Amino acid sequence: MSGLEEPLVQEVFASNWIAPLGPQVDAFEQEFCDTVGAAHALALNSGTAALHLALLLLGVEGGDEVLVSDLTFAASVFPVVYLGARPTFVDSERASWNMDPSLLVEDLEERSRKGRLPKAVVLVHLYGQAADIEPILESCQRHGVPLIEDAAEALGATYKGRSPGVFGQTGIFSFNGNKIITTSGGGMLVSEDADFVAHARKLATQARDPAPHYQHSEIGYNYRLSNVLAGIGRGQLQVLAERVTTKRRIFDYYRQALGDLSGIRFMPEAPWGRSTRWLTVITVDPEQFGATREDIRLALETENIESRPVWKPMHLQPVFADCEVIGGAVSEWLFQHGLCLPSGSSLTENDLERIMDVIKACAR
Image 1: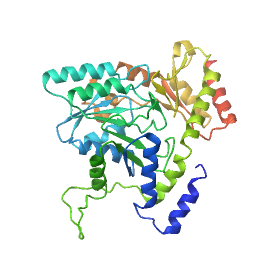
Image 2: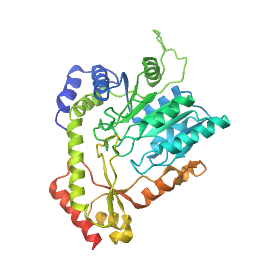
Image 3: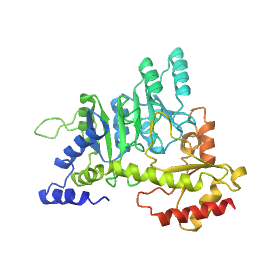
Image 4: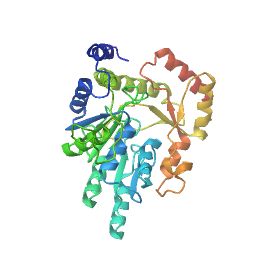
């Protein structure tokens, strides 16, 4: 916590407005729009809820196909399955580790010729870095396929001077406890389309019709963010720029300390934007370094220091074993060799030195 949240939460308690919805929620939505440059925003209880509503409102239903980034967390895919649709995964490119635009463009061209375009594309912005949005968006628009941007990990990043999440038909963000800012649990849906967000707002509030009695003409969901958590979010949003600076400083520390070690490479910063470095991620060439990514992870764990492999690609997940993948070799290589290092905003220099000592010992 930044310390700015507590007065806002006290304001909630003083007003006795604890239930979902309320003035803090309204203010959080407006301030978030101002931060990312979106026209309209809807505060929800998770990024997963935001993605579910986005897919639902774009008409995704049973039997449809949705193209999704292969290298991501499963929450980018689960809502596709909630709706009975079938995910197909698109491999990464090496410039940003995000969806490969050339694979997507080629695949949409082929699908268009065969008359079987997907119902939507879910583009994930990974580890604080925007994907190369423009060629993907242009291809989607040319074929009439809606683009959803999953910017859950990329709040505070830029793509050609703008925030990821605001280019496609709709974008989603997450405020889960591990994100760059948090409401403990929460998410946001954004769009330039006022009617789209208004419809999502209705569905997220149990789809209650405007009547004095309880009347429902659609199936609804209990997806709204509470007034208390919105107060926390407003306090967190005020320190977003500071968090980005801290994350990038932690990355620079790692790069200076480890950059000369043979076999260690860092996730690149793509030329089209600025990464938040939400997580500092390395790849390890075991032949050059003398140890594997897993050797380093286990050595850190022995010292009670947590690290994690890069996301296991969706096409390798048992639950998606029957799904199609376009490419896959890049995401597989990144998973085999990639390691996410401790990157919390509260890390001290002593913490970082401890981590460095363990990693350097592995090299020896």
